Amino acid sequence: MKCEIELDGKLRSVEVMHSGERARWTIDGSELDADAVEVSPGIYSILIGGKSLEARVEAKGDSQLRVTVASREYEATIRNSRKWKRDRAAGAEAEGRQQVTTPMPGKIVLVLMKTGDAVDAGQGIVVVEAMKMQNEIRSPKSGTVERLLVVAGQTVNAGEVVAIVG
Image 1: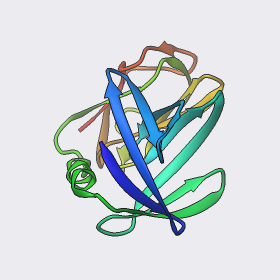
Image 2 (image 1 turned 180 degrees about the vertical axis):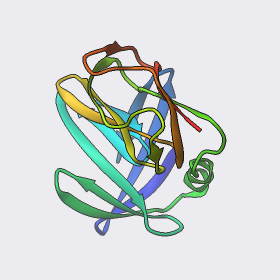
Image 3 (image 1 turned 30 degrees about the vertical axis):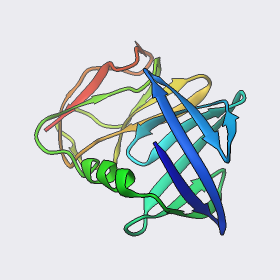
Image 4 (image 1 turned 135 degrees about the vertical axis):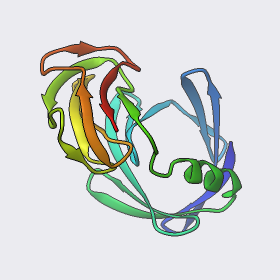
């Protein structure tokens, strides 16, 4: 995917090429060695040159974003936004029974909900520690926690179901 992003008044050319689970990033023609995983809706765990960051991305309008990284807030505008709009529309609140999975292997350090609890879309269900960083796994929809499949201290694999929300 290629697009232009205006970030705090500076226009950047960004290209992301996916190959399986890995992605190759090019910004203004320079390759960037970075891994990014969406750990819950709008929250990304990013590893750049061995440094771990968390980014929160909120839509403000049609192609406007508010991005928060390391307590700094940035305004961004997606210039070539046709694919971004299509992907964002697909990310609306999920419907029906949903399996909540962990995007990476790690250890469950905290269980925030219990079976039968009401949960809102985007609300945390469990916290997973991976690569010495804790990531909250959030509900993709509003509903009820029908089943919790993990306990604190348990190790999990990438893609493992940790809860079912109905």
